Length: 222
Image (tube, rainbow, N blue to C red; front, side, top):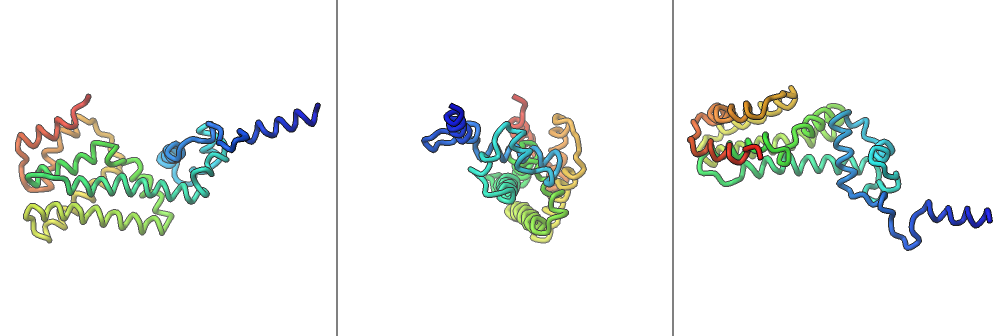
């Protein structure tokens, strides 16, 4: 009887006999990535570890390895998520259709208001992480260069000289990096109200009432 109970128990601990994975172990890759993101942005990369993540999610360590080879693979996936979301979306907004440089700048400003387009917490966490990771710093430098080039190309599209486009793009990107690094806590309505003036500062042109209204309308609280 004792042997029979032990034998049955061994099957219950290893999962179904048909080879399927228990539901608690079949959490998606995004579930692990989201948990790692929270830890990274709260406590830094050193705190991102497999066992604590499993406990945080109420999952088994085995479930982690269905999606990632090891911790390094998880960290690489987070970096790729940052590159795709923050840099990829920023470039896309710079390339979005616009009738004027002011409207183009408002398109870019969508990134500073929509976390789905640009995650400031993640950007700060990556910058802090890169301070002690030379390989990541190199990727961060490339990302910043890509962002600067995208903003400069946006300016050149509207007839701004190459020299002016470069300086204006540096001003835009460096200002936003400073805003993120200083962790500015700003009331959303107040920030929205300032954005037409930011557009004028960055472009040297005053946005029209129609351009301002269109921008504010797409960021109106639901």
